[in-house]
Length: 234
Figure 1 (cartoon, rainbow, N blue to C red):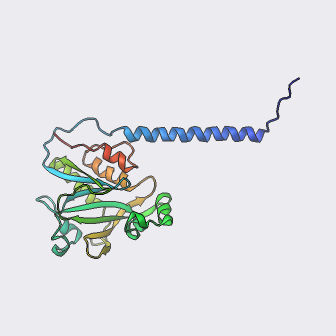
Figure 2: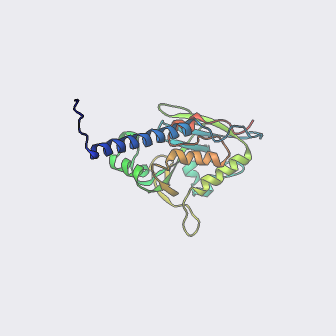
Figure 3: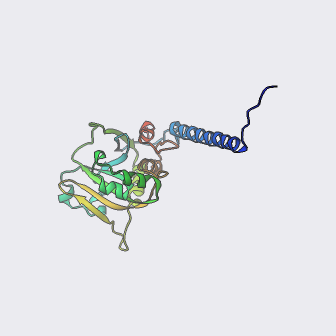
């Protein structure tokens, strides 16, 4: 008579739990993959393109890059930037991120592990990084820049989104945290809370979506945002 090995009830429960967790993780990854490749819109609005903005990515982080000023909007006045600040710059880059990580990390090779983990797994205050470009932004090194054409109405909706991303005091003035000497790099208090579910890339996608531009269903990664970029009009 064959001997049937005894398997404890605890081991059976553990195996069932392990299979359940594995199934949940696989399902979660599949949902994210579908969101990564699925666009939020399948058509191009029938509008005339009159404005060009730029979206940049260093494979981790995305930014929106707009003219310093045009006939519709002047960021110098809105952000309290003087001509001394912006006289040599034609474009401003806007990036939203976790406050402590953003302000205390000058470059990726100086990343503090604790700040990085805290940024991902806590609900943290946000900051806006604003920096200048002397000319039309170009791809260089690890940074890829993509031009994006949109209509005047789309541009105005994007401006409203960006303007609303700055936290203001009782006098409705933006709140500057600090500047970096020698460059037009300013950090401002921003609205919202940063977490693994609300990252710099999902903020960029929210801005593009507010302007009725194409974005991925899930925009947690910079590559997802960049892959779905296309002009917002004919």
